[in-house]
Image 1 (tube, rainbow, N blue to C red):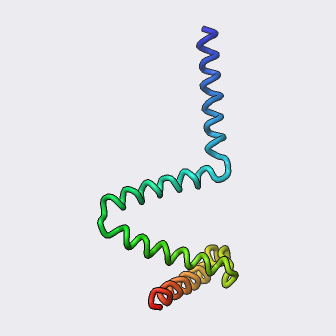
Image 2: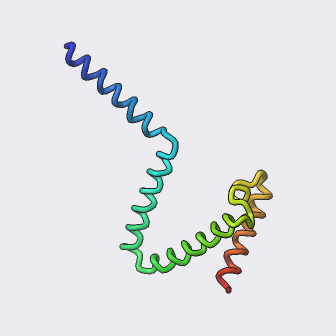
Image 3: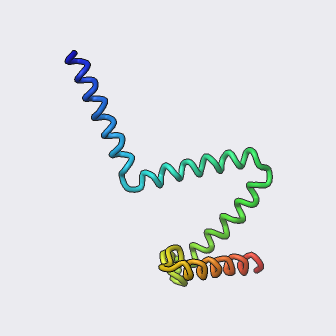
Length: 104
């Protein structure tokens, strides 16, 4: 009976440890990254036209982030505007930049 109680206590301690590890900063983001990476791998195998479209889109996104890192527009201000109107305005700007880069 005491052994059973000890095992229950150990199980509860392990549950708490797992929960606390899952709540560490960045843990959810890392998990989400691996989920996205797995989904991408599956799409590359299943959808024949996905790979080229993904590469083009990825290059556009990288270019957009590089521009924001150079100080043209701070990334956080673009991604998290304060009002819904500003959010819509920034989305349109990003779309225009992306389209302009594609045309060039």
